[in-house]
Amino acid sequence: MKTVFVVGTKNSGKTTLAEFIVLKLTERGFKVAALKHIHHEFTLDSAGKDTYRMKKAGAKEVVSFSPSEIAILRSPGDADEEFRRLSEGLTVDGFDYLVIEGFKILSGGISRSFRILTCKTMEELTSLVPTMLPNLDCISGIVASSFEGKDFDGVPVLRFPDDGLALISRLTGAQSGA
Amino acid sequence: MKTVFVVGTKNSGKTTLAEFIVLKLTERGFKVAALKHIHHEFTLDSAGKDTYRMKKAGAKEVVSFSPSEIAILRSPGDADEEFRRLSEGLTVDGFDYLVIEGFKILSGGISRSFRILTCKTMEELTSLVPTMLPNLDCISGIVASSFEGKDFDGVPVLRFPDDGLALISRLTGAQSGA
Image (cartoon, rainbow over all chains, first blue to last red; front, side, top):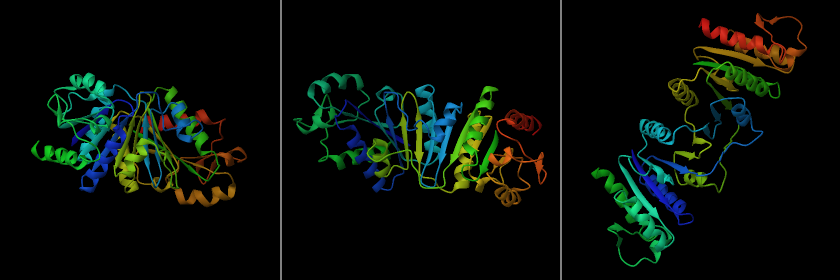
């Protein structure tokens, strides 16, 4: 399984780009999983729901199982360990790609990954690119639209949506060569 | 891992009993997971959320990862196969008990299980007990409060909350003898 990271600043185009990548990889027949990293406290569960009652009663993992959705909810342990578990499970289940939005903290040390940075401004780009090199495969997001040239510090800059399909080719091409 | 089924008719006391079981097993130091079976179409995800966008774009599994919760969402395949996967995962993760609310369809064929039927009325009890025998370990729910005697068709009837701790003893005692 190949892991695609879309990291970047707030409102720089992360979700739109991640959504596009999921769509185009799925269209090409790949089995794709997506992960959204949320930095603040957040739960899909809500007070009063039966699943919430089970969690409050002490259940360490709560599963909601309906004809339309299986939802497995748990409190996370160590982020790297949780990520390893998730990756292993998805690999066993035959996924080709995991598209991750956010989670810059995990951007290093994952094998077979492709890393995209999205930014709004040149100031953000100038400050963030050095923190990600040499593990940065592509730059995109709002900043790319007005960017002059084809690369920044040797990293290709791809406009979205114009260069979207070129980005997908890099993703899938990089996979077959890995 | 031991699986506890709490099955029964609508508003017969399933959730309250399942919540009590999770609480008391957790208090006794067991690692407990809970599963809620929902018969109708249902999703914890909602339109507009980023996770929902990824699912609509084609992601076969969507993970929301925050400091307070990991939520793994997927469309279910075959129910028995999904249940087997979930059980295996929980067993690997060292869970002692899985408390299931609903899912009568799965009540047979699971090893190391304890099955509780909750009903509101004697009519429900009379009609449902034969469908579950011989895989029925205990009867409870609203019907138990007004029930005369200690068993029905040879199955112990336990009042809740009065006999709650006796129920827990049966659960844990049955485990040590299994």
